[in-house]
Length: 192
Image 1 (cartoon, one colour):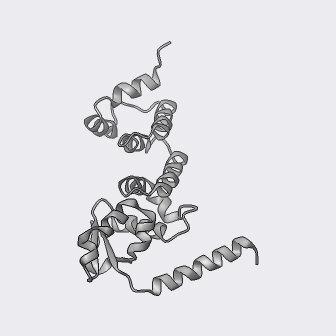
Image 2 (image 1 turned 45 degrees about the vertical axis):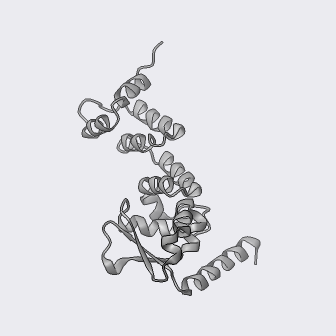
């Protein structure tokens, strides 16, 4: 067996053992049914996320001996599944499910301070940029500002000559980012 195969086998077996251990937290999404909460381990979540680490070190969670349920209201159930799957992965790449939810996972990675997930989602967003998602990606890249992703979205908008005046997406973007149209116009029509 090669080194990579041994590593993969060890990791897979480690996860099997870990998943058999008693869970100490359940996660729910905004659209999850009560019985659809996802079981997880505080230590795994804490190892990936500084926010979860701080949360689980707080007196509220330390003092509690009952199984806690936490609702991540910014995610839908499928997105939460992809999020949890990533926390239990080796973090080297996004699963197909995670790629489908790269926008929401990018936001969650920023919110929960998971740098590796943020980096992988950012890479996926840049690779999948097109005229239909460029404004949404541009909006996502604004808070906190992600220059590389913002520039990539601007470039996609500029290269596709997005019809600014008739797009509903643009109108929503303008409401949320009043300086956005000026920035887009400057990107499309640079001064000579």
